[in-house]
Length: 150
Picture 1: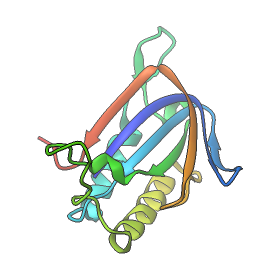
Picture 2: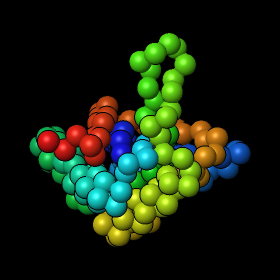
Picture 3: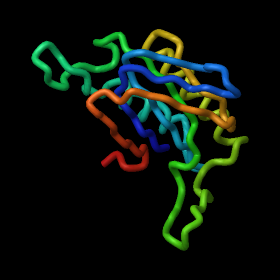
């Protein structure tokens, strides 16, 4: 499971011209799910996201986590994070989980994050053509892969 986490001042996702989810201060997270991902990946990655100390404290140092700033999460499914570009110019998505595997894991990640932060998680819609807008704060962008824990 790969997450691209961006610290944002605001973010939103629009589907068919209608805003589906939006946040102010917090994280806009793109989540890529593979065929081998499990509940263990959800819990490890979810805790890692919530615990990231990348929000500024009173001295301007990145020292506060999401809960400390009462931040929100906008979680967007993003199968293209698992693109292989080793051969040719057309990406291969063979490692990305098919919907029958990915959707339940995506929904479990939404539930896990919501439980951990104590508020609803804003989302897009799995498989939809989405327009994502964000104001990256910093900019701060991190990539975390649950398979690279060591």
